[in-house]
Length: 265
Image 1 (cartoon, rainbow, N blue to C red):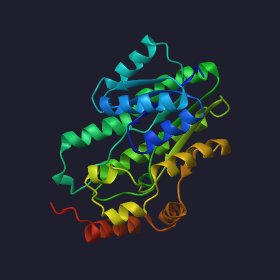
Image 2 (image 1 turned 180 degrees about the horizontal axis):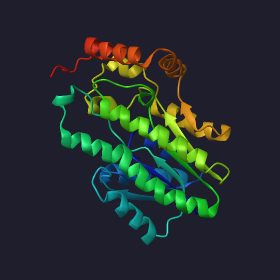
Image 3 (image 1 turned 180 degrees about the vertical axis):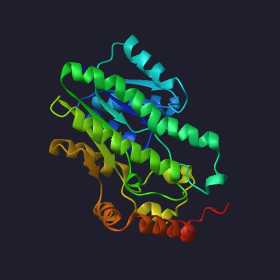
């Protein structure tokens, strides 16, 4: 196959799971992450196991200008991207004034700016060819305000609305757009975000592979918003029924009462 799937945040979690799925289906891959050593190991394993071409580009997409450097790399190497999976992102949780402003801005740059930058470019090329797939990894956090994670939940709300808007605008174009909304998933995300969870809680979460497989299968159903898991679907239904202020207060109470992270200012 001479068309590539570009996956950001591909060195672990849901991004790596998508890389495995697409490799099995014969896609050539362009894998993006910060850790060149991890990417190189994944590149060798996938090429050896599936006899596909895997190109890697180590870059930190939270840094200004990095998205353009990725696009320049694609152009220099004449890589035709048929699938774009904007998976790279991170959370940053805690009491608002306990959080670093610089780190929050890095998160916004990665979770929103890089997605818009890459989507803008690759959607244009897909529209010209009349086909393509764009999957933006949002979150169940997109559906309700999250005290102690305000910028994170807002970034995922942006992605959800952004993806739905583009899907409506370009319906019938041959390009499929999806916002995949996982809830808590068994990845390194929680501990890196400051949202500490126990090993027991982590083990109860669905594996990243299950979330990615569900998202990929959902493309056949032409769904734009895909929510993994019945508990997450129930939460979102309740979040829409219960008055928004009450949802906000409930989530704030739960976080203050049960989080092991220091939240007081």
